Structure formats: structure tokens, C-alpha cells
Image (tube, rainbow, N blue to C red; front, side):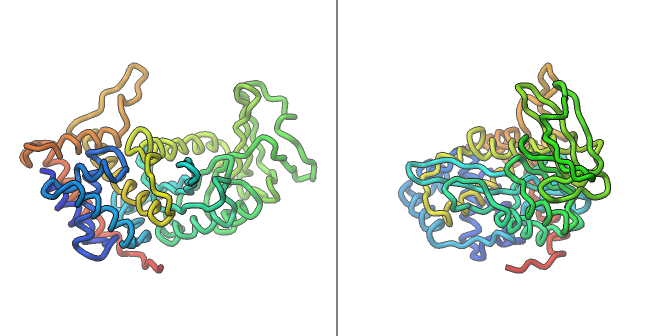
Length: 375
């Protein structure tokens, strides 16, 4: 069954060639399955599961050659992950940054996920070279421009970001480009009322749990549009949920709560999934490729887990009503089970996974060449 999965993934990569060469496409498929089996990005661990017909040293050499010599088309990769999403309807973008240190090497990744509901996959990312500092407006705008290019402005229903993603240039760009957004602000930012009076949110006199909404207010030199754009809620320990955006004011808190999907994505890319932080790579070009392959593996697991939960193997619920495991972890467990020796293609789960991959091929063939990608 492992070889059948590799062949199916290779077929998908032939429809949207992230890499052009067929041998490289087969390698990417093998690497994805090896990642799923090892749950570790270290090359020595992935090599244990890459190709059972050759020596371990040969597998490691092949992996090193790929990361040294092969270029990936990240715009095509973005189109590929979009094949897992419905071809119509608005999509939500979540923007965040993750970082870790390996010795004196500092890894700093700015990443955008895309999806609907709880289904979110990495769309595009860049590695920042600023000593693990925050991103700036130019970094964010460049990243979002690629997302607009891939998706089209009409498909973007909402852009979400945490307290790092603030500033006049950033807010103005989102507003001028007609992108609906909700961003959380640090508590020290001031409100500017239409009269010109400036006010700190700490002066609003809110008790814990209380909220205030401002229909006409300016933050960082940018006015809200139709609905007004500021929503403040007092939290415990003197903190505030301070939101600014250009969406429906009564629902701003509910919309911002959907940002948890990118946190869950990072958790599954790292400690709870593929242990991305264990990478020993220092080169940014190689690290960007590694994030791409891990993202493909994650998207594959999430797609399988979602279909299995709906149709063949529902995830159990705990007493509080939440799932006992995430959708991606569910898919990861299923794929690891299917890639074990002796697993047959006639098993129910195997048929389900092959059905998912066939649908994926149909989806990208039918829908994913409607936009011209340049670059």
C-alpha cells in the first residue's frame, strides 16, 4: 500500500509540477510518506523510511542532493494546496510568525495559512533575516501580494493577524486594497475619536468580560470604513482584547477567534506533528524547501483526516464536546497505519484514501488553472 500511496501522490504532482523532473516528483512523494512515518524532519530519520530497496546511506545522500540542487516552484505549490479547498466561496487568511534557535542559527518564518472553518493549510511563507525580530510592513505586504496573486482578491473573505501585525503602512495597504481584516492591537495603542480626542483603552473603565465598540475611530492614522472598526474586551490580569478592522463590528470578536487555526497549524508542523524545530538546516533556501515538504505532508494528513472523520472513521468526542484528536493527527495516524508492511489496498481506509487522492487530482485538473501565475 505504501507504493500505491507514493504513486498516487506522484500523479497529483504531475498535474501541478512543484518540481518538473519525474524522478524528483517521485522523490517528493517518497519524502512525504517518509515524513509521515517518521514524524521527524531530520534527514537521518526520514532516510529510514524513504526507499526500503536501497541502503540507508544512499537514502541520506539522495535527500541531501535534493535539498542542495532542486528548486521548488512555490507559486505552483500554493495552487496545489488550494486543490484541497472548495473551488468556490470566500477563504480566510491567517498571518503569523514562528521562530526557533539552532545553536547560533536563528530561524524566523513569516507564514500565511488559507482555508475555511477548521480546515487551514499553509499557503505561502518567507524566511526573515532579521535576527528573530518582528516582521515589518514591507515583509507582510510582499507576502500578502503573492496570496492575492494566487487567490484573486475576490476570494479573500478575511485576513487575521495578532498583535505583531500593526502599523499605519500595513493597515493602509489592507484598506486601500479592499481586503477585509481584523488585527489585534497592543494595549498601548491609542484611539482617536472623530473630534480629535485621543484615548487609551485602559481609561475606558471596563470590568473583566465587558466590551466596548466604536463605530467611528482612528488607529495608527487609519480610519475604519463602513462599520467603524474598534472592538475592546477587558480580560483577566489587566489585559485587553483590542481589535481593529473593517468588518462587521458586532462580529469582530467571533471572527478574530478563528485565528486559532494558524496556531494549531504551527503545533502540527512542529511538536505535535513533524517536529520541524528539530531540523539541523542552517541555509534559508533549504529550510524554505523543508517547510514546503512538511506543509504538503500536513495538508495531505489534514485532507485525509477530514474525510475520514466525516465518512468512515469519526473522531471520538471528549466530555467537553471537543474532538479527542485534531483532524490532521487523525489523518496522520491513518496514513501511518496504511503505510505499514502487509497493509492491503482492499482495506476500507485504503480505498478511502485513494478516493481522496483521485478527487484531489480531479479538483486541481478542473479548477486550478483558472488564474495565470507569474514568477
